[in-house]
Length: 368
Ligand SMILES: *Cc1c(COP(=O)(O)O)cnc(C)c1O
Ligand SMILES: [Zn+2]
Figure 1 (tube, rainbow, N blue to C red):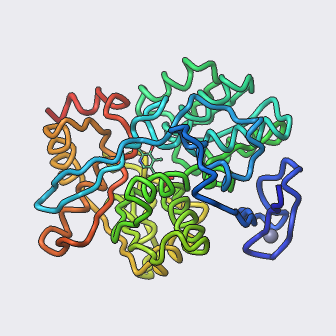
Figure 2 (figure 1 turned 90 degrees about the horizontal axis):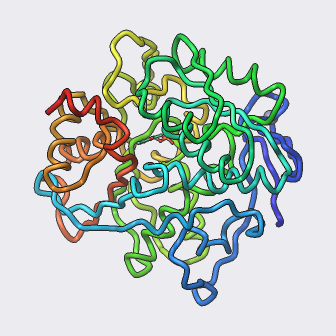
């Protein structure tokens, strides 16, 4: 596979046949890879691996549950016609399986037998499940006090759970220490994770008859979903399959909005005392912050913040439509509310529904 790692900060290059996950200068790495794609070479399989033409891992190493090709359904929220991509319909209940599928396949290709990940929950579940299937030992670092359901799930898959007191940063630091002895398969750092999350937009574009929406609402924490979508859109444009970049709407909680703070030149949040109900996007310092900001800005998109009470209304409204999602995921529906009356047909709006409500029944019980 003709690919290499490039450091966006200092320009250093690394071979993708080595288990590197960050540049010597400390920056994250990007993957340079020019995909080829022909519609007529698409197989009949209805999984994310149907796009293996554009996936930079050897398919022989695929670690898979035949996941992906999630439903795209039409719905109505706040008077806006919305296309909902049901990405909570994955083996572990969140879209992070897309990223884990590619990242763990790459680990397999590299012959890695033990990994470290740090996560607030869903990526821990995804990495754990794929490691279980791949026979790789997983060490998961988690902030103590997040949704216990997710910790239980990750543990059930056989991962070793390291609970860390403090915030996400303390957790990341503990994981880095642990990673000195194995491979840091961190979703926020590793570019192979983005190669997996980009499949959501290939699927959507194909499901729309090779058309593209005008707006895409995405809840953003570390930005792996948003950046995967951006990467996929860039590829689809350069492959001449689509001809425009949709507006990317990055959704964060009012209580933790480092993207908006950065754009507005504010110092940013770091309080952990007043935690948002949208725990999955409460990332105070996203590793790829400037990359996310650049992607949203280039798409002429927007940074939207939502408060907990609107998230709760959005969660209930979704559930009353038969869509049971977790609060983090409902943040995107809540953000749509700010666009009520501002978007009308023929504009197409896509919302990625990222995580299942079954992950957080204890939290949701208190809201009903
Ligand atoms: C992780 C997560 C997000 C945010 O994804 P990032 O890649 O961290 O930006 C959104 N929703 C759910 C349910 C998640 O688990
Ligand atoms: Zn560098």
